[in-house]
Image (cartoon, rainbow, N blue to C red; front, side, top):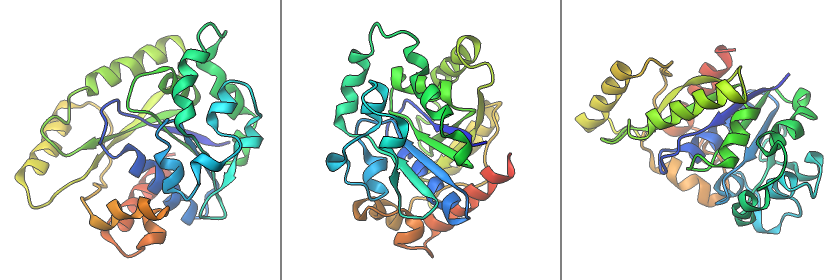
Length: 253
């Protein structure tokens, strides 16, 4: 049965999409069957995995508003065992269109249920906002993976996210847990990165992954080529870091 992990943090620019793309690709590289769901209207996860997001017939938007079945919007990714449900700017209208729809918080969950058994991992990229899309991801997920950028305001907004997770857990998904926190954009040359890591470890009572994702030029370049880092530059430090993170995720089962 597929383990569903939502990658969430309502703060933008923390490495959510980068983590979704490269964790998915690293798990697929290990031979796991992976489905990546892009729930961000920007569609960066879709294009970062080589999908032409503006020229696909069905996306997660059509799925949510009931215009297609989940099997109609699954596309082949850059690995044989990696599939993608893409998104594009149309998704930004879903929130308004779903007003008044019964059980709208569970639309994605009900759809995913039908194909869950085909995958080892289902990774969901959430938008940088605590919206109806994020709530759909949280009702579908078993766990939430929280990327945190190694910068001064790292903890800002995190308490809000944890509060939302607890609300969802209480009312909509009793089994939801925080998978863990992963540090991104770590710069070994600055004391600040180290301070942030220590500060978060002291403050958070959450599981923190040992793997820390470094700032890496190759990692930043990869999406513009529509490739995950382990295909764009498999020997880079970024590729190695995401392989280690994937290994930790697998071992946490």
